[in-house]
Length: 452
Image (cartoon, rainbow, N blue to C red; front, side, top):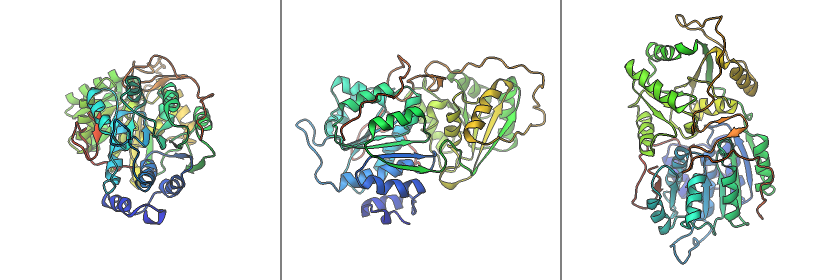
């Protein structure tokens, strides 16, 4: 099957082909026709399977083919589609895909997120855009200041909805929903399903089509996964040994805390290994620079906290390392999903000390498989070592303690309260921080991504 077989406009198919894609992925094959019908959609698929194109392509088609865009007294065009994402990096990549796939339409797009000045975003919104990609916190900032008009939204997309709930955005999402027109199309995409996601879907979606691609909460089969047992104070030497002895040229490493990410970069630097950290305390300029250099192959190691797990989309990324196991098992799926994308092979290695054995069991229970263990000679763990308490997160890290999600990372403000369950969500009736197609402005530095 080709993209033209799915009913997409010729210009959109042409743009997709120019990006190097000729055949749709399974999620795209199912999601695109469902979105084109105009009904609501609940879609679950593993990360790296093409979810972004699964909604951007049909959204572009629907808006481009539905006639003259809405206009208001203050704007040459009104926002007709809103895409909410949990993190800045993911927001930037989604909007990049919108621009790439919509290059032969007359639609414009923009991205807004926190961590940068709001005034350039205000000016951009005043010019008018058709498709807005945003993080919840910064969107609320604009709503409170009256600098964004959501009265003409025709399509709402919640991308990586499970991650937004994990990060405590449910209150923000409810506030956004309350400001939208009741008659609209709702699309909810999630890598994993939970009771909270099901509750959100029940309150948001009206008779949705449901799509599931591959087993939910599973890991991509073509990713080679293994663990290396090691003592907690030997993780850094083991990582440096693996990078050097195996000639790893591009490695994405996940740590549990921001402080741990910074410290690991310093330690690797002393070993002659170039690395940079990306997390919530870094400025957006620094985060964009690190990600761009890593994508371009100028940087050997990128060390990230979970805040960036779903905003990193890199062709042929060969290695992901869990320097620390995540305390939320689902985050393991998201982390290793940075490799093995779009059919490519990949390797995911976890360095596991005695403190993390319970976390490992939780991960193996989630993915329904036991991860093979390989002890590296010279780094054998002490069989008599006793587990010690683990610092689950650093303030603003973007992960969460069990039962206590924080609201870090994607928005412009720090968390003030833990998220509430999604039960009771009202049912509607039926890179700098700004970027815009067809306009000059403060553009985030980007490398070409797969667009998923």
